[in-house]
Image (cartoon, rainbow over all chains, first blue to last red; front, side, top):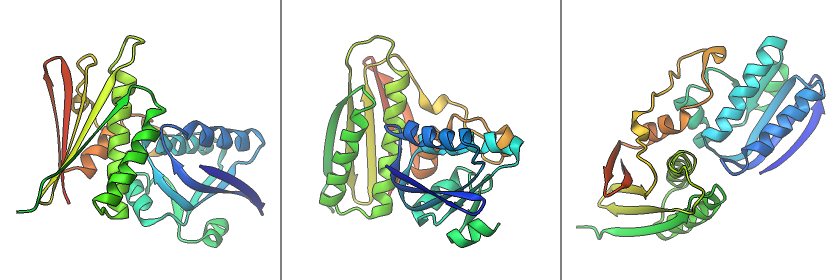
Length: 109
Length: 139
């Protein structure tokens, strides 16, 4: 997995490339916690390069969402590949997260 | 009648072994000409099932083998996962309510739920001191 971030307006855009699975989810979790600790509470996850996610990765997204709710933060996802979107749909995560087709729309909402 | 295709892999009960399994599945997918979404789904199902075994089946510190059989007959894909750990029936786990709001969603239990959604059948038996999980999918 490769994670890179950039600051755009009020958001930090986190680009995820590769896979999030049982062997590497803690790297993803640490990066999110690092952003939270730095006071970044509005994050757009650009998932265009994410081609695999398992329950370990979904769990990290859910924990992050639970953390941002009380502080009115925003976690937006964008550009999910169809197979990844399907996993989000069947696990009920599509109704937990705001998912956008483009990064522009994710940043505007 | 289409020829029956079979493969099997043996991995140890270590999380790092999942990466070995992924590589083997990728190779198999190429040989058996699976589509990208099918390969991803089978990868996912195996990760969820095998990681459950690695995390919950063994109390001792010893190395154990987990054996994964994959076969295709006609359009029926069958996966059998076998281990010699303590009795552990993943099908008895309570499935999460995916309709719950964020604050009420428990963070666990998704693995077996994903398996049951992706595969057409999931069954567990205990035989000769082995846990045997059988998963089938029409492809």
